[in-house]
Image 1: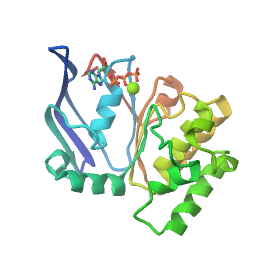
Image 2: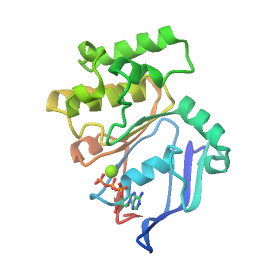
Image 3: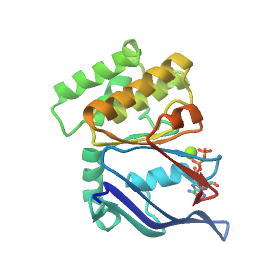
Length: 221
Ligand SMILES: Nc1ncnc2c1ncn2[C@@H]1O[C@H](COP(=O)(O)OP(=O)(O)OP(=O)(O)O)[C@@H](O)[C@H]1O
Ligand SMILES: [Mg+2]
């Protein structure tokens, strides 16, 4: 089978006050092309850590992450950064917006390898869809939590990436906005063949995915 991503025997541990804390324990699973995978589990289970590792953002302690048969953690840092920009759209749990840039710039920046005009145009289209186009000139410090979340979502989608990794993308949104975001992700999955991996506490949302992975205390259940 042609997996898009193969995660094999993945372990992640941190050294904390002289003690080693093992956050992910021998995790193996695959993500198929055009997959829609939900990852659920209690707080502290290691969901964000796993998503960061999938997105090339954090080195595993042991094990491999193969993307189209290539081990991304064997690539040079510069090549990983380029691969990430081309391939991955990432919605961070805590947004990670750039405070010095306004909303429009935060979104368009993710598309910096494309011509500036089309990046700005795509950014405006997404902000409009998410109902925050009138916040384009605002800075992150001037936004509500839900608005920041929408900017983080727009930024992850603006590049038209093959893979969309979302960490609690609806955690701070009201019901209407949640539905709009979910419908947008599902439309991208259905019509543009995007592969989606979504971390969520929202079981209703998880149930809409093709497959669900339960993570508990760093292990797949
Ligand atoms: N940089 C770090 N140093 C030490 N421990 C860390 C670090 N990052 C995460 N951890 C620990 O790893 C565990 C898993 O964290 P993670 O953020 O992946 O959980 P999560 O499943 O995403 O939780 P939540 O649902 O609350 O977002 C936690 O116990 C956390 O304290
Ligand atoms: Mg998390």
